[in-house]
Image 1: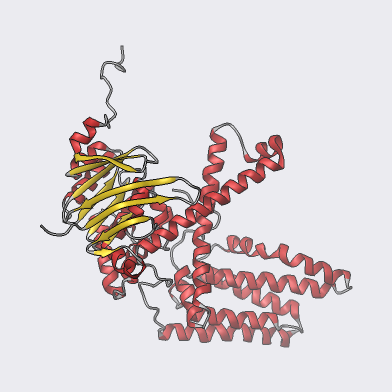
Image 2 (image 1 turned 90 degrees about the vertical axis):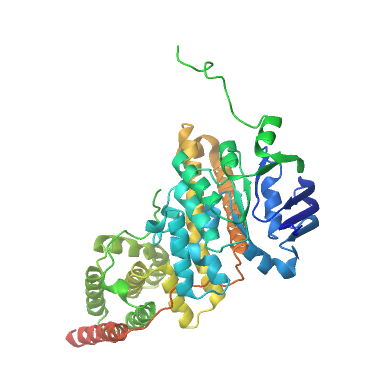
Length: 240
Length: 242
């Protein structure tokens, strides 16, 4: 059996204010797999994924693509783990959309002309080609989200980590994103409260509870087990 | 989507936009030297240079009224020195100082308004400005938008609950207003941390790289020669006529 792409054992993390955010996480991700991360707000999902490329450092062991997440390997690991942040505004800091999408490629040492081509292709993939020369802070929230995703897709990482990717996206935008993600061969970790999106994109789910993984299994099973959906009886709110 | 007061006017690029940032910065430097060293026949020299800047604004397709208004931002900073000169019995010197500052600011604005920030910073870098300082400048500019966005959201939240910043200040006093300011800075600080993490996640190692390398064309050299020569000639002509 091939080694897991991500192998996490006994991960614990406490924020400087004393909040114990992760309390012994064991997790693994195989190549090509798509996993949804469910759980209540503040259950540790975002804190967990921040550890995968060394943005936060807790106790325990994390291996990504066979490399331990430690200071000597961070440069390589950050090329392998593409993290799309929850708030796209945090990710878009360059003067134009094209420059922002090319940011990671240039950091990797790619030739500017080649980086620009790759960035344009990534923008095309998310339907944002027309915004290439615009300032990121002039985009709508949904457009920012798509550009942030393009910035990560351009880097062609081995593992895609998306934190609330459907926030601010309208239903057609969510559908397009799900189609796009399904067509990508990379392994994916998707933090989401959107169960339909998770059903469309992911093979299995893990459920976070107070800094621990409470359960894992098929997406449908996790939704049913934790009653993780917003469903009302149609008649309850029907007009009389 | 919204625009903030920090932004430059939306317009069609003019001929000055096409010039290399280095040629504009060098020409600006010459202009600043010309105006700052003007002593004799200053009113005439100032008038000639003001006309020159106004013509440059029109040529660059910049809104002249907006340019004149924006350049006035420097006036409050020079008022103190004007006052000192006036009290020392040299009102003419104070006035000359204010005019020099205003025209210098107008010239700087002309360059800023026609040059994208990354190109401008690259121009400074090629003149030997410390790279770290330039990177800080770029982020200060970006974070100004972040802070203005945070402030806008806080103001909207106040309005949505029937309040205004002025009313809050009047009703709750300085303490509450200071509290709101502290919240604004705390939120901005938090956002800045997130931006930094996002940069690290995409392999940032302390240097911002650019997509396009600047090219200095013959037209840039011709512009530099003309833009350096014209202010010098204008000053010489004004001094001779006076």
